[in-house]
Amino acid sequence: MTVKKEILHVYFMPGMAANSSIFEHIKLPHDQFQVHYLKWSIPEEGESLKDYALRMNKFVKHKNPVLIGVSFGGVVVQEMSKYLEVYRLIIISSVKCRAELPKRMRFAAKTGIFRLLPVGLLDFVDHFEKIAVGNFLKKRAKLYRQYLSIRDKRYLRWAIENMVVWNCNEANDKVIHIHGDKDVIFPIRYIQNYINVKGGTHVMIINRFRWFNKHLPEIILKGEIVKNK
Image (tube, rainbow, N blue to C red; front, side):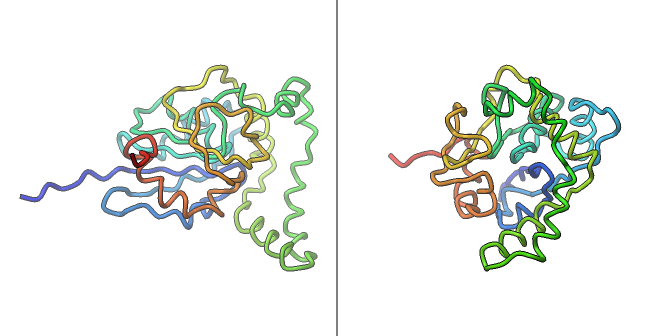
């Protein structure tokens, strides 16, 4: 008699202002995993991060899911997991607590200077693509346009504020943290207890997808990369 394998449901949350196409090259074995993509909802006026997480949990339709979040999406899935029973909680290119935020973000939170950021500047991406000169700039502009598609100003202000003022003073030891040693948004020197991706940048979910396709199934199932003895 053949025993049917239990399928794990994996929910991916993209980074700030990004859409789910950042995961387009991530392939997990179909006989073990079923993938679901979470999308950013526009926050309600004055909505707290807690209430937003509870609202996002309504899109999680399976018991004991795997939650995977990138960058600010990693913060959101950590908040979501406070109100869900999860099989595995994984963050990529993100942080587990305030101590892992770079000093400039902690300074921005203390001074409130983040409120002065021109969130409409992301609209410049559209114009940048038109005026980009050279193959490198044209390729970069195309990537920005493809992946950074959430331009709503209320969402952007809300996301920036909740990233820099995130009220988490102690890391959850159940979080599995995957981080690149070339990440300039969240520098590796502030990060503790992580799986290191050598040469990985803040956008490694896109340009290092082969590493994830090789290691992510094992990380989900075992909580780590098991090194050959």
